[in-house]
Length: 216
Image (tube, rainbow, N blue to C red; front, side, top):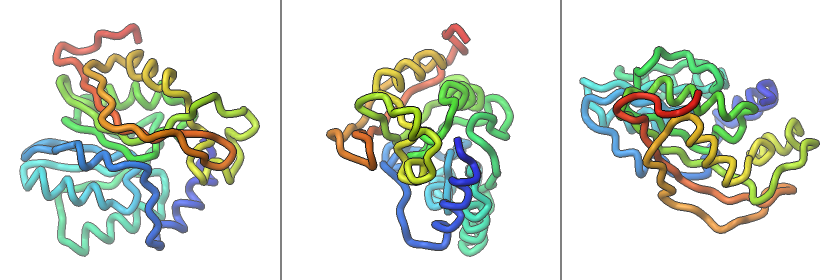
């Protein structure tokens, strides 16, 4: 993942009205009162603040992002609305700066496709989820493998398709991480994006109550 390109690009977008999301994971997440939730790629904190309201004073929400600009804007928004049960953390997805089994729910919108090591990201999501916890993620996948020459291309990265993997690879990565009950909640028809053909999906899954059942 080209951190510098994403940081600059998204840092600028922090002060605009642009919507970066490819889906609405928050609309299916259904956080409950008292739960601890995590938003990966939290941007300006919109979904974090919404979940903070839903989990109430006994719950807590962490927003994870790599962009200092986005994090600063998110913190300003939390202060503006006097929301205290949130914390914004600067962290890469491949090494999430949170302790083991801290979260009941993890959500993300169009962020994981940026990661170079997606297996590591999903391993980290598994690690920070409590036993029985679940995720709801909106993301994109490519209908055919992305050519290597575009993987680090700044324009392709900014357009959110450079790091996309195929649907089969996506599902196999989740299964390898140890998740069960994997369900595709919604899925779009393929569409062109840059020099690729991709599709959007919202997917959910659970960490088994008994712990890891995978071969990690």
